[in-house]
Length: 348
Image 1 (spheres, one colour):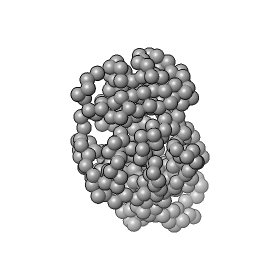
Image 2 (cartoon, one colour):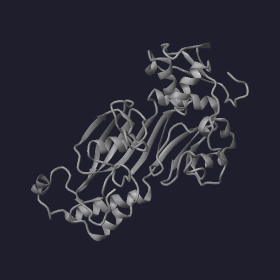
Image 3 (tube, helix red, strand yellow):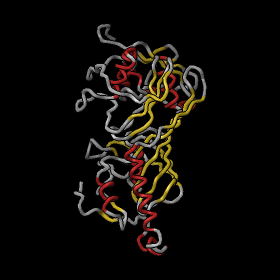
Image 4 (cartoon, one colour):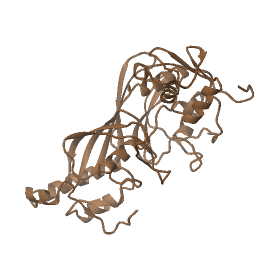
């Protein structure tokens, strides 16, 4: 271990019951999601990871209540600078804040987005976040997914929130408008990993990480369905990949959604509304957790963004306008989907 390498303050997290019996490297990957598995494995070999204060090996088993210590090393990355970016903060105290992320806002700086991100805005809002991994960001949303995110403001809050996320104690509920007509409820339990040939995409992959998504129908339309979606796991693009896997992709998804599908009989106003939507119709609606310091149970709700609310109103208006024009046998003949391909839409 070199003393010349830039190091973060030591981090220590207690093993939650859900990770009991796991190998050390598996537990560390769940507790410190900001770092890659390969990086964590290297740190274990270098002695930067301890188990109850002692050096440990990758295959050592952990028990509930054990303490994992990590002395991380700063990785080479884009150096984020504070930027005055408007933030919709729903709650804030000395230990955490909850933000309602708009569409189009990238969460972390990267090669293609070196600035103008949520992280840049957080550093401007609370400069002390520079001392925390990822400026205290505990979980992520895709650039064009809207809704609630929790951010830690202290090292203790960060460690406890990361542990709560790994233990599936942070409750996240989404609204998703998907293509086609679904039944009342269902679950998707399929592993997710990198696409075997398209490395920028995720896919259901038997070699991927376990992923579980639950959904329930909130409102059916002529050719689309509004769902309540909850997650047991938090894989990259999980909802988008799982819904595409069961052939009900999130409406507007530019990566997994395919060509634009319109309801039969849609008027020109609705067609233009759907063509202009321009992103996946996915919103993180509710967030619930136990406060990492006070222990108080807390929950927040973010209203639907304007573009999604207008799209849903357009679909409702279409249902009312078409009521009586189709008998029940129409949808039996059309099957569960009932949509038509937009001939003006270019295929992916």
